[in-house]
Image (cartoon, rainbow, N blue to C red; front, side, top):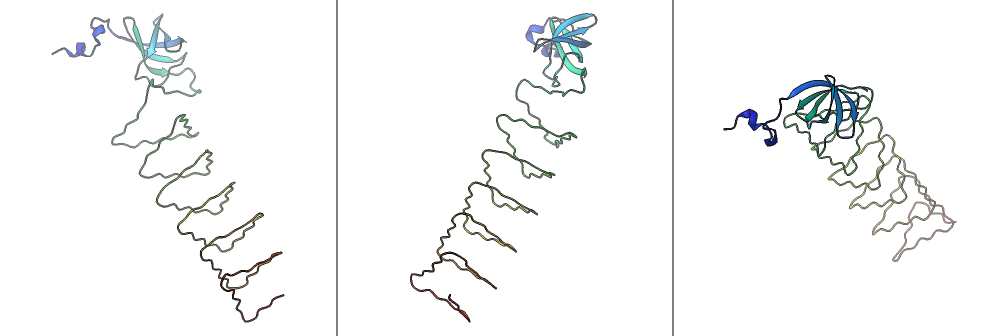
Length: 222
């Protein structure tokens, strides 16, 4: 069986130098590499795969040196702590909590920029908001039931189309103002008014194919 220390090395590192650790100051960067100043000398180092906090020039970091290779293991002290810190990964990043719960707390807010798409899958979604503004080109919602309750609701649309097998509306007071044309087509239509019913028009036509009936204790025409 191969010894553990040799098994953990890459094949090309079988005869590599000993690894040394040092605190270093990053003094220069060419994009992917950083010039780390430590113990009076400067070495080019690259962030290790486990160093998710992206280093910046001026940071104090912990570096490991082995032969001609050098890595930034972690950022010890940021040179500009007031600037936003960046957690970076070269490829896809997945957070896995098999037996835990993920909570995000941000006193100044949370911003999400998903250039491609944002997918959310959950058994239950609960949100408590003081106010919300949503702007989208197309909104599509499907489900079994929808319930909404508002103290005041205002809907503005250029065109509205409602399709329902059964539609009911309950209101204590209802007002409709239509500046153009209104038309109702129904197989059967009935109006039931407990008190007054009035129709005012320049021209009113009442037509019936079979019959027209007007009933009342008193009927006044003209």
